[in-house]
Image (cartoon, rainbow, N blue to C red; front, top):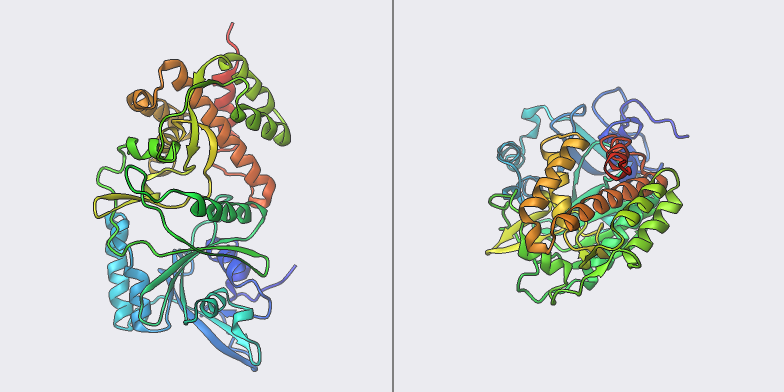
Length: 414
């Protein structure tokens, strides 16, 4: 196990620590924060410097200090997508960066150095991506708490401060599979307009060291937050489910590829989920419903609007042969869980309410709504278990509460 200096963030157990380990993991790199006596060692040169926003203990963002223009752009780009309070804070930081005055806000600086004689493209992902692109690139890096669903992300800018791409980084088996899945989805999605939303263009898929990287094109600079983000975009959800085509004929749950997949994954996961999938099959096997694709993470923070059209990103969790209505269920459940901090039982109740209000548009009568709700919760549990098995650990929000809710909903009644 590598032992890091006290001022090297790679030794921390918070979000700054895991992001630093993932992106700056090569032991030849020297990282230093102004929290100790360490100095840049002989034989090293500075390759990048980042302002830690707003502080080391509450880090949310690593702002590149390559130039005033780059620093300001990395803070202000796509600010219209952010909630008002975050937008205001970013405006302040962007103004300071544009003036070269981030020090006035007492933001600590993370220094990244490489050994003399070593090509930075061997050690720094942003340098490597810049070489592939034929231009120098600077990375603005988001910092989030460690979580089995989280992947390090880098927004890339050129010397002029223009956005050049968005890199998602898979650092363990679970997240490597997720970024690879997004690359597959972006290659295959239709781009014919109509009700199907606009999606980012895939720029590049690569492996670098032990990381899997999916690089997508920047979003339109004037993309905005959705008005009334809580309102489901039903036509777009149906277009995604049907890939822009006509509805598929309903078919019973029993014998469907979806149920076969659910059962196989439950068998691999082991434990009580196998009995819960069997209980769903016994109760609803004869219920016929439409199957199609789903986005897999249809939530307000993955949606925007540009020139009157819906724009949707983050496609790594999608797939085919899912009950139509899964994206509706996901928006209801995850908005309650993440935006309103509802516990799993409360988020489940809100999901059921959303399905009740909008399910008719998806062809869901009460029996089908119940099936979609419980099948979605099983899908979510299996996704959580698979992330844990892939090295991501268990989600504290979902484990074990989600299994308890499923047991209650699917337990046979006398």
